[in-house]
Image (tube, rainbow, N blue to C red):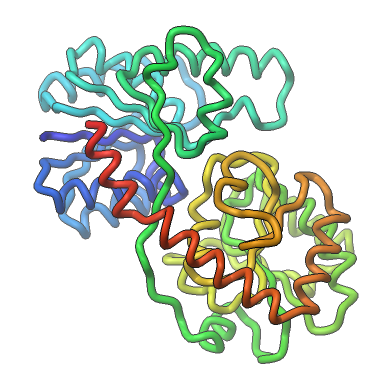
Length: 367
């Protein structure tokens, strides 16, 4: 088959990771693969390294601009008309909306859309949520099949009319990866005391990730000697988080490391992995922490409870609840045996249920 994957941005967040993984797996399976994306970021570089053809969208970006959206629609339509793919697989809301409509107009045989989370689940005014839900409904109607990466993601829209037969759940999956040796990873992150308890996260620094709640919990927890919090990732609220850490008086106990290429290799430095999100679909970083056998404390939102069984292979806490996050940090920090058991159990869960091979096989079968 000829498959074109479409995505709005070319940075390397979770949705871009998904496109990269599927594109490389589809190429290995012998398909003709092209990726259509906005910008020239890390995704483009990684795809070119795998000798996957990339078509750059000059006018597509996250911000809304009517003129640019019209130009993008025409560019996508013209590309699809010329390329004549068997499959056009869109990702992200803007690419899904504009791309799915352009694909219908171009007569593409099969249009697949993958949702990586619903923005109507994020904190926003009610009228905005209603507008977003209408847009989502139309986007799904324009697809032939829509992939939900968790059962919760599907449940959130299953009451929408005329779309039930379009929805399929295919969980995200990852392949085994190499990590740095523990002390090497710690030194690279700026931690030089081998006995320091290190808790950390790999996350876009975005309001929905709940990192302000994490700082509230860390302010209480950091009174414990020899503990360091590491945030690997970049994003729009980095300065706000740094200022808040200053305000709480814990700036010297938090390392904002910024974006690191292949960030998952540093997971060996962590004693505890934290994911205090306000909303999620099924985050890759959770699966990476699991495969790395890290004990995880995560918010009980979105598809996270489909991976974490509280007390069996990790710890779930309510979103926005810094007190429970703090007390759970204390519990795990004081019990190395519990950390080891939870980490090992989560690694087995991820290997069994959330492999890249399983995700790719189910997705290609849907095509």
